[in-house]
Image (tube, rainbow, N blue to C red):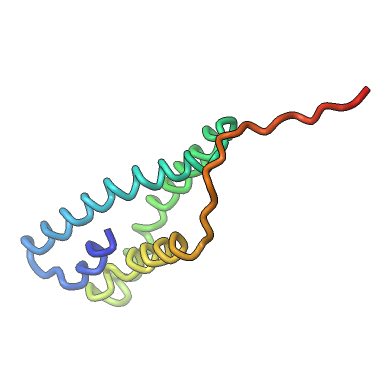
Length: 117
């Protein structure tokens, strides 16, 4: 996926665009399923629906705002910077994945506190 974003500024023909789109499609298919699985594994069973719903909402919000931001960058700076915004977010996601400490998945439901009578 990152390699697809990195090649966008160098696309000047239909053939090159087709090659970049293949990279996008391959990377997106791996990224979305992997991200959803990681999110699901790190949420406890009781909260999985809520967590995946929030994740889906953020994905939809990015799908709405990203084209607007990309269009603004494209119209202001030209085609040489067309892939700058998605590349920046992809690299940011990679850095977060590398440097944020990982914890083991938690599948234990939280127990309700029992009051002593």
